[in-house]
Picture (cartoon, rainbow, N blue to C red):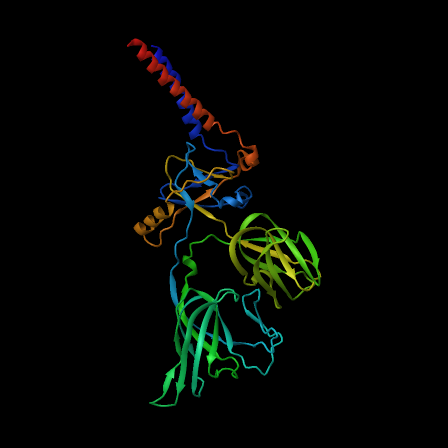
Length: 445
């Protein structure tokens, strides 16, 4: 009977330990999820106010989906399906880039707010022949071939072709390609097509490494680019949203001025626009993501030129990333601080409807993290089974409900973890029980 009593004493201790180990960690806030039953997977966009609670260092690992019994379901960041594409052929004029002269910096290449190429010649000498030409495809195109218009005279060129999405970073597409036209009639040589391959890009650069370009003195000389462009209707991505921000701080920097803008939270910024005040018509800004008092990330340059109609300009696309303070630097002060239009695309969480609903989205924790579910493999299998047009069902978030609030984000205010001490107590009790049972058996013998 005494052995039974000791075992009975140990069982509740083990049960208490197990219950404590399985208790869900505290989260800051939750959102009820609404969805239509029947889908094999669901995707939900994070609302704007969720970013104020999601730990920036966690990489959204502290965003989980739970069922009615507070158990996590298989979930993860949603990877969009690849869009379909269609062939495209377009003509574009070549724009000459003036060369530098006598060691003085030459042309400065920028994008205007509608995406057009802006070439500021700088101090380049007019007598130096250009060797680089740019053209704008007006949309991202995966290039396949580049054809040069006939010039009416013999040509023997060796060229390089590069591509870019922002006029800053360039990717080589081909090196040492030849463009040759010799003679007329039956025996003529006409090789004006260069084969290309690479990722989609909007801007292209032609560098003449050898020979004299026949288009140097021809205004509006065009090239024909052929390739494939993505179908906008098939893009599986969250809609871009815009915030119109007024400047929160203005600081004079030498001859220029910094305009700072604070976002309501660290949002995944993807694009920028600028809206000038009524007294200003033209401006150029360097966009910077402020990371500290002495550091920042260069995002690109915005050029506003008349005529302008506010939001009709194409945005400056930037590398997606969570940013909470942005800065516009202008070399010349403006009459009034401009408005910054910030484009951001919400992250999406995809989950499988395991267990029983209703489901909830939990956000924000200093220690809890989403389990490493093989969610990408599961979604890939569903796409393979249902076809490329398959998409997860849509889930929407309800009103924010605060749980532990800021306490869940502050490690110093976290409740003491009794798991380890309780485990040692249970182990010691177990060891004492085994020792007592052994001693009792020895006495009987």
